Length: 341
Image (cartoon, rainbow, N blue to C red):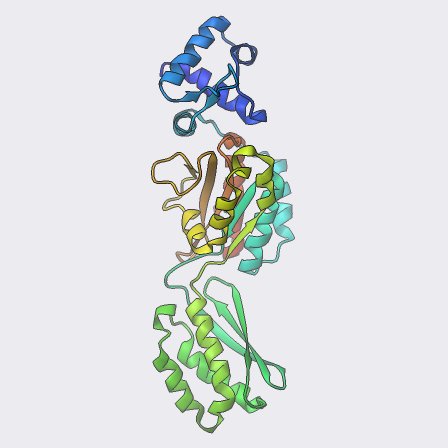
């Protein structure tokens, strides 16, 4: 891979991104500022094909990048731009209008990024093994219903409605708030044992029949507190590209498995990661790519955001956009504008 071959590969990836049509030597010559003939360019394209970095569709004399070609381009040749102050201000304005409850925030951020990029986007709320519920609050919402609100250590609000066997009195609600918080607040999901419910039943005494449905709802909220909520937006955008439209059933299955999806879009480090369907061990169809970036929300909590589309998507253009979205998402989750880049 001498410098000219690298220039040719970079140019073909860039040109193929535009419309998905195979690239011929004449178009390549017009695009590249090289004092070489089209015959020389054809020779370089043939050499890149022998290296496995380009492919030649049967119906065309042009070339397209292979999976290995995209991998080489992403790892060695890709250059990323930076967002202008105006572009950042536009994204900031979007975030200013979002609901900052974590589940709603990731839905709105994913929708905004999908609209901006024209691709599918997935995002998760912060996730950590030791996430806790800092406070429970019981509110009567009907003669035989009570809402249990739980504020998590990540700043989210979870709710469940409990149907009670008997009307709750004001004293029941005061007692339930005190005893449930005493028993369940600041525990982890791993601590949510049946023994805690048994202890609460004894503590409620003669009002156990009325209060135990509420306690069970709070217990379930604790068990679910560490689960990441995953938002998926822009699935219909995948129909615009033959590469992704051909694999839509697999991608729908992938996007509906929220636990698997959440694991795949939270990289192990702070670097932006691109996974290609052609990568060894990837669980994606060929021709599909996932560009993901994690964000930190304080207190060791982390979430992720990803752009999903064809492997010919414009990585250099999308990288700074995804970087800034995850920066703002982390700041919104933690309530901080520190560390802005």
